[in-house]
Image (cartoon, rainbow, N blue to C red; front, top):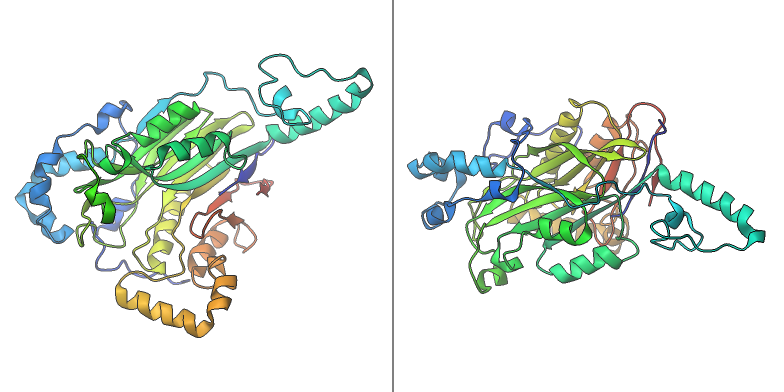
Length: 406
C-alpha cells in the first residue's frame, strides 16, 4: 500500500525535572492510559465542585496531596483526568478524497453526491486525464490542521472558520488544544462535542485540568457558574479513530500556585486514523508555556518515547508546543531572557528567531525530533500558522518517506 502524503496547516544532555514539578514520579507520566469501554460524555460527570472551596485554600500541590481531603477525592480526580470521550458524528462511510467533486477542475464540492458537471465532448479526454491525476494525488494525501482555539469561547466564529475558511475547511484531521467543557467563560458548552456535531466529524477529547475557578483575569467575572469545570484537548477526523489513548505529561509549574488553581496535568492524545490510503497515527499535544525550554524538550521526548513502544505507523504530531523561545520558569529568568534578546538586537530576534525557534532557543526540542526521525535535521519538516508555537510535524514509518505539503 502506498504511503500517504501528509498536508499540514497549522539541550543535547537531558536535564532533571524542575523541583516545582507536581506529581514528581516520572514513571507516572510515561504510562499511557487506555480508557474504559464507556466513552460517552457521561463519564466526565462528577460532584467535585462541593470540595472546591476547601481545595482553593491550598498553596501548592504537595500541600494539597498531603491532606486527608485530597486522599479522599484523588481516585475520582484521576478517573476524570484519564477518561476519554469518543463519539462518531461523521457519515458512516465518508467518501474517499479524490472523487468526482474533489477532482473537478474548479474544485466544485458536492458533485460526487449528485451528477457531475457536464463536460463538452471535445474536452472529455483531457478532463478525464486531469481527474485521474488529481484523484491519485488526493487519495494519497492527508490534510491536517493544528489550532489552539483558546477555550472555544468565540464558538460561532471558530465554527464558521472551520466550515468556510479555505485553509481550514474539509480537512481529514484537526488537532485542537484548549477546549472547555462546562466552563462559564465559554457558555458551559462541551466545545469539542458541539464542534464535532456541527462539522459532522468523529472526535476524541481528554481532560487536562479540572478548574477550581472560572478562570483568570476577566474570565473570573463572567456571569454564571461552571457546570463541569473541565478543560482539555481533542482531535477530530472524518475517518474512524481506533486505539485512542492519552499520555500524561509533567507540569512545568505547580498548578495550585498562583491565582488560577487547577487539578491536573498536560496530556498528549493519541489515535490511529483509518484513512482510505492506509492507517496513520495522530497526536494532539499541548506543551507547557510556564516552564523552561528544557522542560518542553522533556515533554516532547516523553511523547516520542511512548510512540516508540507502539506499532510503527506514519505519524502526525501537532498542537500548541509553546516554543516561545523564552524560559518562563520564573519571572527572573523571563526578564533576563528579555534583556538577552535586546542585546541580540530586536530586529534580528523578530526576523531570525521568533519565527524559527528551532534555530537556536528551542534547538534541543527540535534536535530531539530530528535525531529521532532518522537522525538528521532534514528528517522532519515543521511549520505553524498565525503565530509561533502552533507546530505540526510528521513522523514517517520505515520505508519511503511521505512528503509534507504546506
